[in-house]
Amino acid sequence: MIKERKFRVWIKERKTWAYFSLTRLARDSKMQYYVQNSENIVQSTGLFDKNGIEIFENDIVKDNQDELQLVKYGFQNVDAFIGVGFNLFPFKDGPDYKEKYGQKESALRQLEIAPNILKF
Image (cartoon, rainbow, N blue to C red; front, top):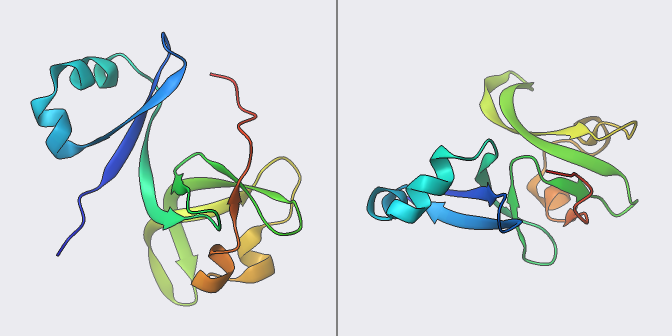
């Protein structure tokens, strides 16, 4: 069974995230309003951090050495695999997570969502 993709949208007036699927978006006029009036809509990676918190695009994750990485969706080229997917990029001056740990899922499970330090 294919899982439905999940998204979240930043609701500026309420200073909070609202979570939705495409099915919900099609039926919920209030959610349609939020999506149409927001500049910050992101997709779930389908992965969870070590505390069970779902990881979304643009989240900042922290590894077990307290180094920060930014989750972004885009082009990737790893070991003869070329495609589009979620990648980790250094946040500020931290090392590149892929270079340090590779793409192994066991290493990704060690990530933890960092406290939100971005301002919207």
